[in-house]
Image: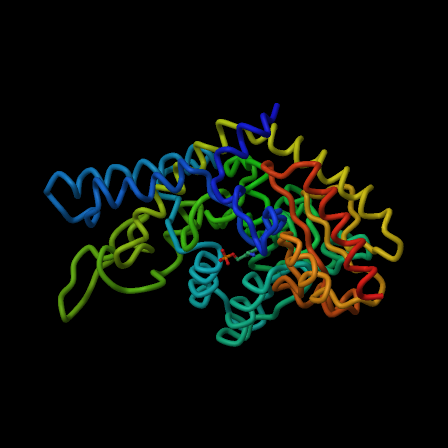
Length: 404
Ligand code: PMP
């Protein structure tokens, strides 16, 4: 059960006023808000143990290293990776995908095929296009239908012995669709292809079991999970991380450096060049603990109630069309009202204190598919309330009256 009053008290920003109105934050798919424990974790780090990790013999450095490595273990346990060194700490999903896409330059050959879905964030499209340019590999796309679901019968036709890698998001940031990743992974494995799952939008709602999924790569950003920005991880199966070359050269990632030859450190350090976002990683661990205390099952069932309520309520507005109508969805509603430009709606309701996202949501191919410039996206989190949905409804009715 969600104790909504207790939870809301954990998030100081929810007391803020915006444009003289009480903040109603419904842009959670872009980034989540941070509970006080996460904010405290960053402050505590800089107040009590700030120092560089891994290299120091002094006590502070050891404390910082312990806290940093503890966070890695928390992530390993939460996502159920086999080994803690399979969790590579990165600057987030985009960084993690780029590590894999760059690494595959030395694996792919001309005319090899890689498969993406039609409903990806640009960060799970562009690095692979760059990879194709470098290698001569071919990018194939699993199409989607009007409900915003992937057409798996078409996926079957794309798969062949030429397929080397498949990369799809677990949940679409623009539509909220939950993709059937178990089936996607299983089918890719049958032709010998590896799979990367972009968990940026699913991890805040669904706790995955990486070993059970048997996926080769999985990527996440902390800031969608109540953690800080600029932190995330790349999970890779040990054998695959060993196959990939390092992404960046620098300190921390070496075993031995001479001017004649450098040898690289083992996992995870091979991919962690330079001083990382130490406080951010530690706070990511705190955020995972915080969400686990509430419980991911509780979070998902409460957010589903919010989604159901909001869908029914918003559909009462004449002319409102929802994009992404799959039964398998997280609490995201992407919509337009008649011919009104999403930006105009977003700007008016912002004046009423309501934060939603408008535009293409870094998923232009989805907008092209629906032949629209963009949508208004309201995305809900476990700290949102039914009353906030009523406020969104009232604000949309007002905006519609003003703009029509
Ligand atoms: N993939 C998806 C599905 C996302 O929603 C996002 C963030 N909007 C990203 C990738 C990129 O994440 P980041 O900007 O944190 O690297």
